[in-house]
Length: 250
Image (cartoon, rainbow, N blue to C red; front, side):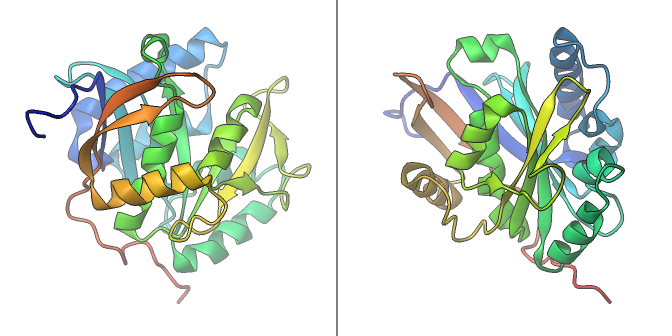
């Protein structure tokens, strides 16, 4: 970072989950607190096994000194060993999800899950959207072509901005009552992380820029709000391969 660069308020950092267990624990504790505030005690993506899984990649919104985790998300790559959280969450309601994920695993598929942010970081003007965006950025490094997500009604429009579309081939035109009967979740799918043809032009250009500049400071527009915030991105993954999760059936 040059001396003339703007001073960011927070950092978005990505890493393979098994590389940083201390930060994973902070992520888990923060996510649990947010879920409790809205009356949810358990969701499939809050299972803690992911922090020991090398197919899991964590994105954290953190303080510059790394002492606090304000929010984040995970990219869980399909590895033909561990079901994606969306499979565990919806498979008993619509088993088609299993074959759909299985087929997409040939070219590399994944799920953006565990998305959350604290009120503290929301007060800085940085919501969960930027962790979503960072998840799309890092997908290139591990050769992930497609990304599923289960979105609350308020977050579907943010997923649309990075290229996700409602996936209506499962559930009730793409919707399920999850994680409890009075909450509706929508399945979205980013079909091609390379071309990003369904993304907003601004966000597509921003994602492509970040893929070439994995450690940088950017002045980001806040979706739906009339101001900007400076964010440090640190999205370089280590010891990964673009072929790691392209897993054709044997």
